[in-house]
Image (cartoon, rainbow, N blue to C red; front, side, top):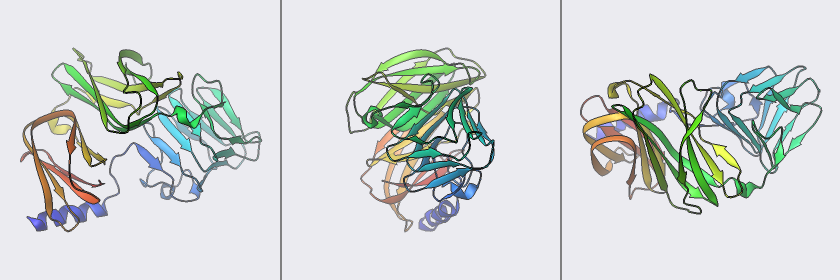
Amino acid sequence: MKNFYLLILSALLASTTFAAPVIKAKANNKWNNKATWDLNRLPAAGDTIVIPTGITVTIDNDETINGFIYMKIGGILNFINSNTILNLSSQATVYVLDGGLIDGSSASQRMILDYLQIFKGNTVISGPVMANSISSGFIVYSPVSLPVKFVGFSATRKASDVLVQWSTSEEVNAAYYQLERSFDGISFTSIAQLKAAGTSSVVTSYSYTDKANTAPTSFYRVRQVDANGQATYTAVKTVKNESAATASVTIAAIQQKVVLQFPAEVKGTIVVRVVNLNGQVVETQTLQGAQGQVVLNTRAKGHNIIALSNGAELNTARQVVL
């Protein structure tokens, strides 16, 4: 059995394709170079894009992202070459953090958000400022007005209903959450509003059941509104009318808790094992069926593997830090 988990560990360490909502620049390099990003791919719709302090990402060709993105610039986003454009949709939100910069060298270099020009290359944008589809360009914000850290967000179909769940690990002056739904991925409508915990430093979970939704494809996102009225969005989750056999489970960890997200109902007994990097099983828990988001407590710490199996179609694992 130990050899089996060592094989899992080897496969995990060799893989660089874990799904994750956050893509972070890891080196000074071009935007359109996969080696710039820690996920070894280019930023895409649905991502939270992070340029950390001390990192410069250069845009030298036109780039377009159609769909939701959430960008945080703590380093430098630098435009070069004439007529270079970064084109973002109405679902984009861009934060330039304190100490972050967007700069260029020519007025022909532009950043467009929802058809509105929010940056020209003959100017410098310095933080803390933000821009979205309703801000009409960059506006000053207070860093404390980003009150929520999301650690889990899932949408799960069960028969004709869709269960939407999300979790936060930290909230500061959060007021409420609006759950928004779309059938085309473009036009979203609020279908529920849930009161936030307010101020919290522990994992807090929320859920809502979208009843009798039999659409072939549905899109969901959560709009978080703080006490000052400012809002941020999660990534967009897509739910299709498909069987559990096609679903993939997302595994994450925070504060000695394991966050599992099941896109479709999985029946039977699910065994959840925590395996250390020596291939030893240090903890085992079981679930009698699962759907949506499940949060498990664990005593394990540090780097471990979370392995799930129900003896049938479900057999997956991921390395995490607890």
